Image 1 (spheres, rainbow, N blue to C red):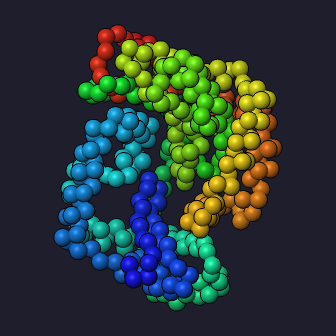
Image 2 (tube, rainbow, N blue to C red; image 1 turned 120 degrees about the vertical axis):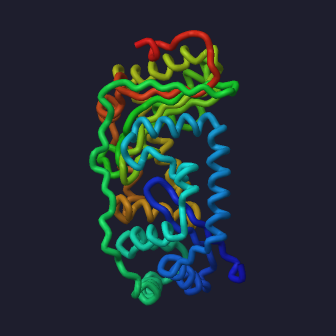
Image 3 (cartoon, one colour; image 1 turned 90 degrees about the vertical axis):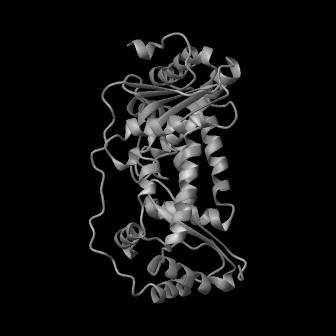
Amino acid sequence: EGAGGALSIFSQRELSGINLQLKAEDLELGFDLLAEMLCRPVFPADRLELEKEKVQNHLRSMEDDPPTVAGNLFNRLIYGGTPLQHPALGLLDSVDQLSVSDLRLFHSQRYSPLSTLIVLAGDTSPEAARESVKTRFAGWKTPEYEHLRLTDLKRQDAPIFETTTVDKEQVHILLGHLGVTRRNPDFPVLQVLDVILGSGPGFTSRIPRRLRDEQGLAYTTYSDISGSAGIYPGRFAAYICTSPENRETALKGLVGEIRELVENGITQEELETAQDYLTGSFVFEVQSNAMVARFLLSVELFDLGMDYLDRYPSIIRSVTREDVERVARLYLDTVNYTTVIVGPSYPGTLLSESS
């Protein structure tokens, strides 16, 4: 507070980290704080109990949120048998059982120089910052611990269909399957595919334009495969929120739009519109120092190259219709996919339930 900075912690499916924003003249203070948190953390028992209660309350509130319920069930079916099937926030029982000794053990095993990246963006000298980091973290040792590696993630070879009844007004439908990693060489092509099919701005994408704008079936609808790609495969997911009486029409429409693109391809106009959007919006990802730091973190994590920002427009512009149609056939399965439906009970049987 005295330095007028801001500090926050984040924990995600594949990594956790610290965001620290402060004035350039207070950078050394920032390094002191990072070193204390990473190398010499304390876990007061009373604070742990308080945090456990906050997390459990959040988890309980998530149980009453249909999109979250659908997403958690979807992940459980796609990543079943691996840690990725669980919410990053944890489960009520697992959070309840956490102890101070659990935290200390986890920190000693998982937090080390070899698994840590420090990214700086702002008015500072790289050489001076590097020396400061070396000095403060010199005594931080790497533990002898075999990190978990998930190598058996495979796309499903049969359809999966699950429904959950909740006393809400709308039906939430989520369908898809295992996706790709961020290092997949087809990732830029999949970004173009996403914009064309379901995640472009406004109603430019097929799924929002046809199912929401033209047919009025959806309150919210989209599809995406590149957005969740990371160290491990993300997921291809298509989502639609609709009224109970329209659930079968909405599900058929969602599957139909995916199948239409896979089987019949795209137009040159769709390709160019997607390329214009991606190349035009990319600069907005590096508008602030915090955004630059996040961008550089991805560059380092996924070995994109320090010139990636400059190369990105040409990478996207080099994508052809044939490229998009190829990856659609390769990465979008219109037969063996998972369907999750969360919402109120409604008379009638969906095709997926009877097949």
